[in-house]
Length: 318
Image 1 (spheres, helix red, strand yellow):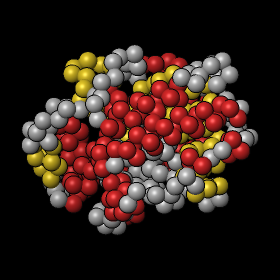
Image 2 (spheres, rainbow, N blue to C red):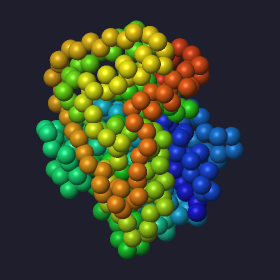
Image 3 (cartoon, rainbow, N blue to C red):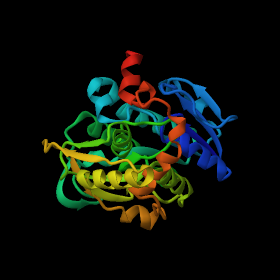
Image 4 (cartoon, rainbow, N blue to C red):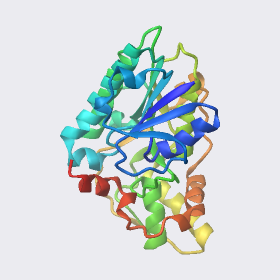
């Protein structure tokens, strides 16, 4: 099978592409390379604006995986217009092109942020999507554009990922667990703005596994699927990071609670992905921390702007 990964040189792609290659798939990557190239030597990668991909760009591919676009709220709020173009219009365009060219499946990297504020309910894929912020709205736009193309000859899958964390060769320290790990090590303090809000979390190795399961799924399967390891309060995450960092390093860590209001609160059930995709995550928060810690010597200075998407994004002056 031949797979095109759009935006495959980023945080998730740097873990997913090698995983696909290990399973015998032929993988090509098209990427802006905003964050450099950390893919294995020999990976075929083209630096190109994905909007310039015509029909010939999809010829010969069986599936397309979309990892491109703006990846978090700070980037979306810094440039809302580009956010809606890259997260909403771009995947819709690429899925349309892929279908016209004979590609059999398009997999879109969506987000649980589409749910917005879920109070104390566990949301499944049929629950209301209420996010009022640019990032969540744009991810839902992209998802709907892709899914409306599905038919008996074209499978469209949207993976609504929880917040992704963990070690990647294209490392980030602007994600909840990764940030808390950095602060615990660097400052000895983890600051929590609101300990009561909920987030579904997933290790980057598990989200890569979810994409693999989607690639391997029966051709009749389409739709949206929540993918996460579990739901945690932010206060619970801080305690888990504190305990694991103290265990690994012997360093004492303090948790500082601010009790600031946050309008983003969601927790989800992943039963559908388990039932239809065979997705079963393996890595909890302590596993994620241990994985980052194992690669500690590769990071150098935590202040490196390449570790923070918004800092790289601002430098690009898009």
